[in-house]
Image (cartoon, rainbow, N blue to C red; front, top):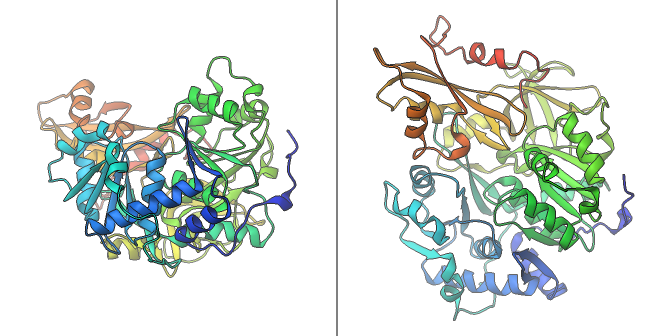
Length: 525
């Protein structure tokens, strides 16, 4: 493995910055000409970012938006995404990034649930908004005209000063009821882990002068938003990909001299299987941060050999403000005892494992993993009951089953909640089951996650037909396509006579799922 080219003492940490408002102001004054965002050959400097987001903030105010109003962004990554993010920060409005892979009904739910008043819309996705069963927000601004829309407004600040507890983003994560929930994150969610690492002098994840960071995970995902803000807070340069493509990612690393990257394991696998990829494509890369799902030992070995850099695994949820646990580079030893671990908590983050009665379990005992982190969410938007179930006395109940060893390392073994992880995206069975059961030929449906070498997990649907019916896989798939995003669609449909249940009527989902995982030490992938 290459030796890092810069000593750890050169880490970038600006402890005086506690909000994104301060970040934009500080770096525009300190290094105005430094590149903040690179996207498809365009460069947005820190001065550009500050000025454009100021104009956009005044434009939001002129459109009647005030503190607490929701502003949605439906589009692929670009410099405009970050201009909107900082404009929201400077007005106290809350950014709602919308997954552009969703269908019209799914997008409609997010816009309605959040109460979005203004939508920034990439023209490519106008048909989705046009096909929604509900009316669009009162104001829709095409991204192609965003420059003209903000023109004429001053490039000075609005005067709004956020606090670390001011909400700044609302990200939607699928829920056990089938409807996505809005996770509200405050400014502190994007500073707390940085401060914790710096306080202990740890370089598990670090930012250094001259860093150029590839943002492989999209900004509607907490991992992509968190990674981008960490680098912008440090004053480094981010490379925004419109949408992840393996060949393009390899080319960007090589041609732009990328030094750090944040990806999910499926992205690594795709990059390494691109024809002609060699170690020479990654000579500038010093650290790869990955999360969303565990990495297989075979993929890690190949990644270490080809990328030839340090690796850090991060574990957390949208509700924890992204990462709360990290497997540091030193633990990434193929065949080593920690390669099955999710990692250990950062300083200032606590972990406990509890049983079904909420009692804390000793090291080695398997139960639900709970995390106490200063980066945690403030609430599920408009769902106080659900918030109280997940956020208890400052502890986030993850829904993951695992244990903590004597050295404080967290090991994830299964899931308490019925979530499926497809290439780092949370998919909840209830959402798919509800859609399937609305088909006239389906009496009942149960969905589980099964192992998949490329994507980590895939969706497997069990279907009980209506009396006298037998729907084909093609019929069911065609029915679901306009109702669910592509990554939620089942890879296989299996017809069964009945759904297994316990005496109280609860579905024995585990009975259907376990046969696919019989050869795995972990029932997560």
